[in-house]
Image (cartoon, rainbow, N blue to C red; front, top):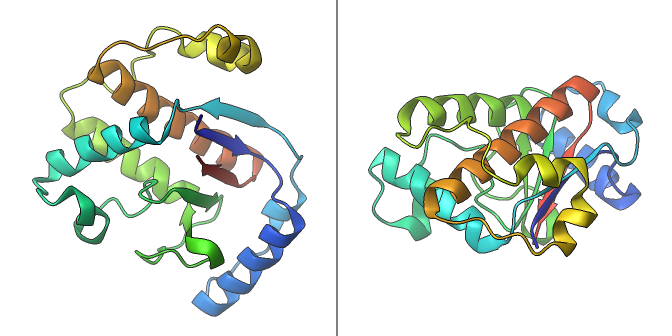
Length: 182
């Protein structure tokens, strides 16, 4: 199961992110370090679902080499990496993971902007809430136990878009990081 969490990072992650921001020259007041621990958990099914979404985005851009799409895309803040952290600050992230252990560091503001542009480009009614999504958000444990299955590529892509969008909005509203991985 691939989940997005919104809330306080572990102490080691927080220290690593702070060092990386300094190295990147990003001006940051560190407000994101003072957020609550667990604000939200958003289920994104699995890594395959995220790849399906990223493949859709690559196709929208006319990128044929899906394995290298992260190097060619203009949507740098997407979750092209297995492990990602987004901060509620505005900065231009590097294309390659900036954190140790191959972890991508991005901007929640940038993610939200990328998603808005993708929504405009996509013919798949992104922004629509797919069946089961509200059940997942109201009680993720019960939803997971229900073994809910989403049907069709369009619903999966809508789900991933909606989950990323909602996580970015919560991140910005609560000044809290997003963290995700399979």
